[in-house]
Image (cartoon, rainbow, N blue to C red; front, side, top):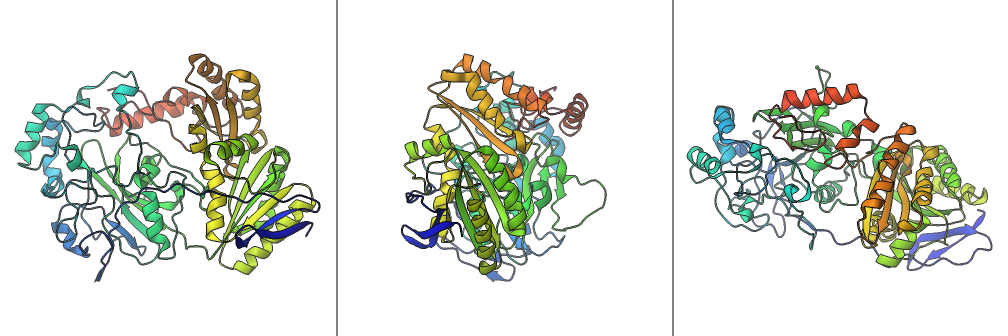
Length: 566
């Protein structure tokens, strides 16, 4: 090999790579922040499993039909059978709060015959997070949130406080609404905010790699459970400790494994969705192939809750790789980053699972605010490469050949490689915690763009020149393998003039490259007025028609993605 190898500080499974004559590199330090955990309750079809720290056992089987709805999680064989009753949202609403998708009493009365009585039941009991009834079932309605949020997470302001929108009639729950609910379900209406917190996870069954779970499950909890059974989630995010799988699907989240496993449009096999009129749309199939007409679930993946409320997900989980290697490399320029990626695809092929990049300013901010040391010599750009496979020797040989070529050809000036899980997590922390470092640097203007690879970093240089000293820092990082750039600008405080210099310039620049103004973060409030930079007028018109068809009153996640026309 053209470079010298030596043991990385503290781990025999990590080695540092650099050309001959290079000096030593500092050891990596730090790690991912501790994330919040929710209770996971698990049960097999024919067995009872007690989960440590979660109280009583959870029972499986079809007896669940006679109980209140639960956060069911099943890792099961590819089958179209439905062992559980349909589920939908609880009717518990806090008076005068801001439930964006509340159902008016009149509409509820019209739908009463279509909604089973158990849908509204929530037996009284403990109000703590993940409280269970005596037989291991969840207590209270389904709408519990925050059970698995990270400690110290700031409360999110209501949308009425953040955005100057005209509120529609359904935006406030009146005393008449509550009285109507009470007449329909005596004693079953909850207004205490603590009682409205539903369990994160109830129980799972495992067979062959298809996960069926309720939408409120936290991604990190799902990942932990399936990994214990030799599977992995096809989705991985830096925010996995707090994000819900239903929200991931509703926003079509991309994440760190997109390069290997593709988007949720491909890995989600089925959905259960509650429509605006109360209809429960049961498309919760576990079939890999189903060519019977329109693939309706695709309408709701990426719809951000504007067409229906996702209540359950069936998702394909790949087998857990037996060998994972991570290399962190320094590159002398962005042209070398692109060439490294091209070479990487050719030489690593089927075992390449991630290719991330970050610029020097990102590394400086991670070091300054989070005290994470760079494991390689200072470079203009850095790349993180992950391989995942079934044969450790085969994968190490392929990665070693690639690194030898990259070092010898000058594409890479310095690097380190790790196979030990502790070191792997330390290297990933340098990439995953960039957002955290930026948030500590000041006010952040964030842009999530899809661009042609050859122009991916040009906009960062353009914005730096355009803003000059008015911005504190302008950084670029992201998923190079997906053509996804995260352009972030920090300043001491929010400035209307700085925002005016950024928008619509960033969107116009992106449109000229035939890019997308939202690669993976969605639209929401902030980008609904700039969809025209990425969507044709005909496409926008069809989106409005679909919204009017499925949600004529505009009650589902109103004001997001499209302007309300109710």
